[in-house]
Image (tube, rainbow, N blue to C red; front, side, top):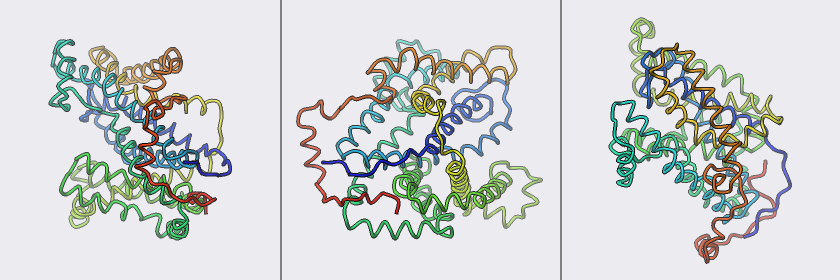
Length: 415
């Protein structure tokens, strides 16, 4: 297949900033989790439960934001490459790091977690048990924080038929109409309630399952891939950033007072009827609105004020993927050895955070970026063409993916 002919577009620097800030925040939040007294993998002896209440705010919108950004990235890659090139990109940039990370990075994490819980299994026995492929916590095989890569890979492959249809002439009028509707503030601001309807149903039958989580995050990915890059929708997001800031603040206050902090004195002021609604049928919709409002707020302000590049952003963009893959393993290892140390929570936090940053940057500079194999394992860009290495693979994929008639313009271009 030939790639779509499109004019070169300016880089959306605000997406780079949002990506770097979201992953940077992920590192800080996970360092804080050690001291939050929550159910995170490893906990300091002394904790501050208030930290957990603060982290509730970040947990609401951090991952949805990353899925929106990932969706936009998929649309950009598909604009520049054929379907086969896109699949090859997803295999080398996502699937291989997922498999490699699950085999190489996650097992030491689980070993430290078990040791912190008092399970002093010998190292050789631990790795022999790994061959049983029993899912953690019953066994020691899991993807832990790399679940994000698994979800992105599934979403990327699932969206291919949609993207192929959007390359046909019939799709343009449909996309024009949908984008026109979504560009209206009255539609865009509450649309998450419609997007999350399948999740509300699934969560009642399969609460906490991977399928339910897939359904939960898929609308954010779709929004990023199909709609976020459209100029009309971006304009609506920017123009309503202050309104969504107010909406996010109001919904966050309601959630803190009714769900996240169960304080009788606060709950008593809310009223039993209102409290029953929020803690009952309105809980999930309120959470959806809260994270959607904050997502729109941060993207709106980023579009308005962060559409510029500099040396720091260019470097951070290159190292952010290795940071994601490695950071949690390093945090757990450092926390395991620092928990017994007689030091304040702030001192331990600073040591864990600075140690994590130093370890990842050093690994990137000394090893990861210098060898093709490490670049592939950690998702760093290379010129490796995985599909082309296997005889007949291109022809097979071409047979599985029917050819479609292209229009000269890209239906995903801003309308």
